[in-house]
View 1: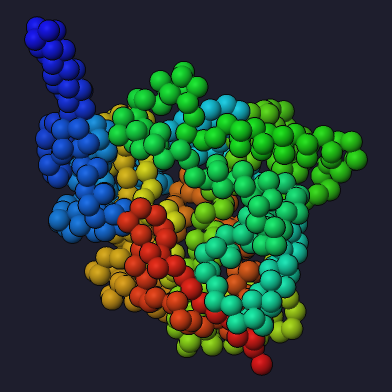
View 2 (view 1 turned 90 degrees about the horizontal axis):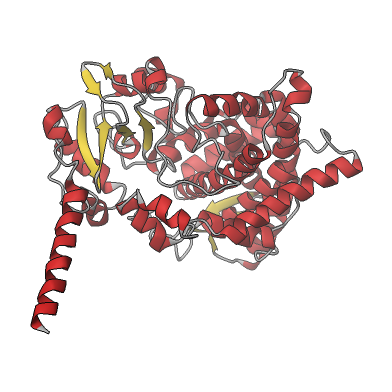
Length: 493
């Protein structure tokens, strides 16, 4: 009996030893390269610091620790990652040396049929799909999609009117997340789902499941990325397969309905415009496969929902907490829009509102860390990057660097006057990334944000309420306010 227990104990000890050796096998990478890095834990690398400080503060801690360095090393469990702080290097990586950093690092692979989305695609495949999808976000096509946004803002106003008349205190993130999902369904797939009035509609329910992956599997893959393939073979998926299949059916139904009713090219939503890429260009091979089409549909939801609702809600809250900013926003809207409802054309001239949006993104950036993968050995600004090295840019730390942004925690839209922007490094503010692989939906996102905010401020004045907590304390694990973004609305006289 004792012999058996001793053998089991020995086997377990050997397995534990092998596991630790495997997890720490790469932890001498930066020592060999002559690059400084925080001491890694043999199993989780530097990831424990994320749990200790949170995803925002951890950037600032090590950004300041290596203040005189252009780069420093970091280990996401066993994966080496070079953190690039120097803004000239960031520019070269995103633009000048883009061909060496063309790919993004994916935390996990999405199972088919949604695997061919732009965030996951690499190399020539990414270039092919990006070239097809890019015209979908041209000025002329955005103008065609704008009526979907404008229609949903009218529904939003009706809901706000009821909330204002009843004196209800509103958590901005919850309210604007519902609005954002309505806009995504409409601009993406021509659907009217009215989540504001019917929060449990199938589209909203399944979208929220996709946006919130299985936490246990997600954590395990963060710790041991190689588990992705094993989980896939075992039939375990980070993203719920039933929800993904729901969106397959949504896309299929929309395509078949338009073919049947002769509506192809007439709905003017994202799906419509992407489907017609080949017909409009007349070029061969300028169409998406069905898998690529599904992939872009998924990313339209996944990337658009959380990003837009975050910027919308934080901007609204910041302005509500600063009555002087609110007054100036409203005066600008009155001058530029008059009594006309905000639309594609008139929101283009709302310069001060744009400044407020940029300042909000600076303080609460949805893309708080941007990564690339080095696809071949190269050298940038005297620093060598080996092939397959993950490179990350600490956006939040850059956005709150007091050397770039005096009083970095203060909300001050004047930072984004033309004169102040000109005085800063062009890569000191990275709301949507930069270079050929920046956010493809940036212009649509900003259009939606501007129309929504202008519509709100044209009719209402958001103010503090009994639940408002300011300054904001960001959550440790997401772009969220720990105490919510609570406001109330007063009707404008």
